[in-house]
Image 1 (cartoon, rainbow, N blue to C red):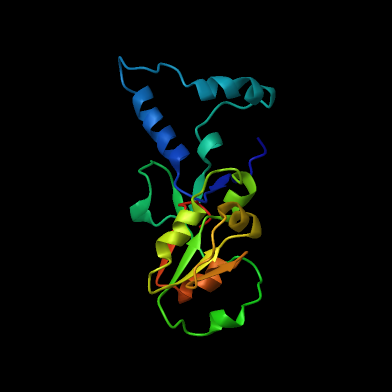
Image 2: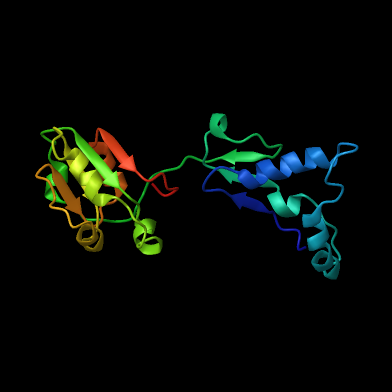
Length: 186
């Protein structure tokens, strides 16, 4: 409306850009559904108030800033500007034990901070996870808070160190492996 540049900033795979590209391909094919772009139809009344017409650029921008490596991106007919993702979780105190070289392979277990906040009532098998590693020759650093530990009603094995929160950018360089829930922030 005002002529300013319009870009999108992604934090994960561009499912929307991919879907719009596929939709545009189908829209141009004869004898196929759909025959109309419902997104454009929905936006037209608002755009008309500002004297504008619908353009795909309104949805996907003139370019997209994307931290995903090119070979992992979903195919979309859009202009992408690559950016390198730099892990940073904010300022934090480094516990002394984290500065020391681990005596055994260190493994991180994280169920994600959002899991605590939004899915606290989910039945995450913390007890089963801790029992499964009890006999292994590893040091497990489990980012579990007091509530998660209390709900699991399990005795923490000797090879498990629990911490309420530890930035992953500090912990992971000392680890041989990570067990996580597959969240976007992890």
